[in-house]
Length: 271
Image 1: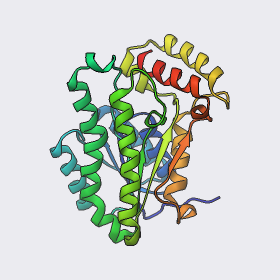
Image 2: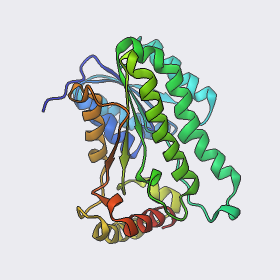
Image 3: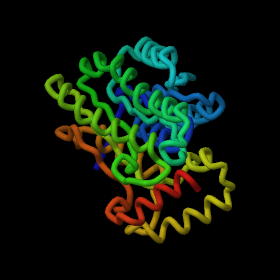
Image 4: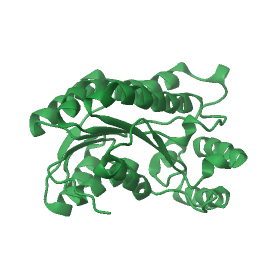
């Protein structure tokens, strides 16, 4: 199955690491013109340089905090001024949090998670929808099986991702008559620095944990960034031209292993 994004403009948020980095690199290999957003300037420059190596197309690198209105407006403004259009918006930027039980949770954690994972997506999408309507483009939100798997320790994050999934459904209905598709990709346990960053785990601790995780996933292994990136590209392509309002899980069937999925999501956050 061939994918060609030549002359397509793709905006990827949270592109400096993990799933965002993998997604940016795959779109670059397929010829896309990229607008890449991140908070870590050194990492983002490195990712942009790797993307340029793929097809010789230099990405636009935007250093912005999507937890602020200023950063969101900057992202939308610079992308449209530079490329004059937008075909694909990948809302990937997010933060996670490990929390204790409800009555012991600091409200700042809740506010931080919702400001970036929900409000940031809402506002950035709002600002870019006119360009997406003009291009008959599409939106892909990166969610998580935490939206449906109930686990101790994931309260604000799980709520935020559930909100994101319903945002996908609602906006897909609004924009379908305008020719814009909206979908979510929902990863399961994914190998990245996301958990290590939250928990402060060492490389050896994380490697050991992933080994235990693999035994509980029905397909036998966790996802890597490329697994999610390939699904994002497929949904963004014309091969999925009538797919909208969906939440596509990429989790090795972990969500069906009810007891294990709850335990692993909890451990992913608390580990």
